[in-house]
Image (cartoon, rainbow, N blue to C red; front, side, top):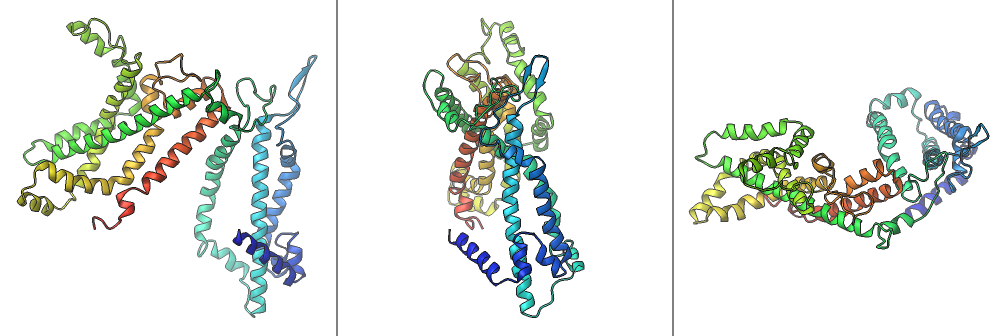
Length: 449
């Protein structure tokens, strides 16, 4: 707040004490720099203002003026003639662009004021302003970082930031299968979708959301820590003195990484089907009398997915642990051995603390990645089995991210999918921030130095 007030005061002082060129620049961007010979800077500022008004008067204002309602006239037919009306989707999209354009204009206006202030100060102090050649040259010298990052920043905004803002806005509308623009407009509904997600009424998504969230957290926990500790155990076992053919065992594990995951997961999915290879041989050998419902029993399906994920995740962790174990000073183990420490004690007090210290951020990354692990769940059994007790086409093994996918693709319920997307972000962000500040490598950076 204090910074904002200081900025407002600074702008007022600039206008009050500035010359006529500076004052006119408050309306015509870059006028002051142009009059002082700063052609490059002045032209750039003026171009931004011109482009803004071209955008707004061209079509931006048309959509911005309807942003509060998202349209009132739907496309319809009058006899054989199609009467085109509003399009809620385009109004929301271009309305957002118009709002962002206004915000950017204010930022550029502030930069315009600051540039005039800087130039006037330099002239009062008897200093010469930079030449236009020097300004252009700085784009490849002192300001080369801005030149280099300009295109990536625009790409991030267009393909990442804008879709996220759009998705957040959709969460406050009734955009679903029954409200498809342009024939059926959608509009703002406030917090209705969020209340629906947490409602335990007849048509509420509350029980389903809690069930899917609970399984998502359980999945992320076991998928992360089972792979972590078992991968570490395999690495310790292979690195142990006296183990022969170490390169062979590592190569076998690495080969599983080389196979595309979607191929192996689809193949395994068929293996564990009721008529698949596993059940087929068990029935043939007489070990079972009927097919094991790996994918049709909810509890068994979850256990099967966790076990299969172990096979997928161990090789990655084995490779990481192998490199880290080789960096632990051998003197520590020798000293502990002389003091009579057992193998378990050395693992507990030397190996594990070192591994947790070094791999803490990686472990957090794996956990958050598993919260959004779409491939394993969807490719193995598409979140099935379905349950009559779960709303929104959710299955017993669906994660929040796969449930979001089904809500979007299968049900075209974009409003609830957007709400779930926001909840996925909140769950991931809260867990990441809390756990990150608890990591040993963050709390005690010099612990193993």
